[in-house]
Image 1 (cartoon, rainbow, N blue to C red):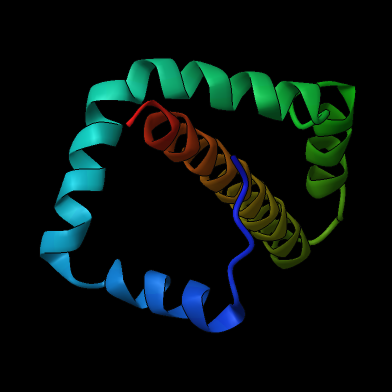
Image 2 (image 1 turned 180 degrees about the vertical axis):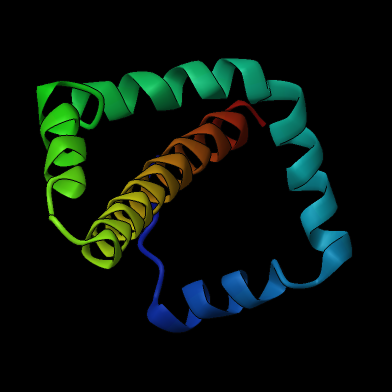
Length: 105
């Protein structure tokens, strides 16, 4: 069941995650579900094309600049993009997991 949250509600919820005790419960749930969540995350990234030919092409492009500094910058950019994508998909998976758990309550 999807919810419509205001920007203020989302901001308050994100700020609440900074409180260590509030984050511990979520961290515990994620740790228990980590193997299954890792599989789901990998499937989502693969279906989004991040671990297919396009990924290999992005790696090739990052390694082709002639200068070491340019290559280093291209590889850093690729890693940052992959990290952002992984985080976004991971958040979506976590959100869906929270929805599934709250629907059962």
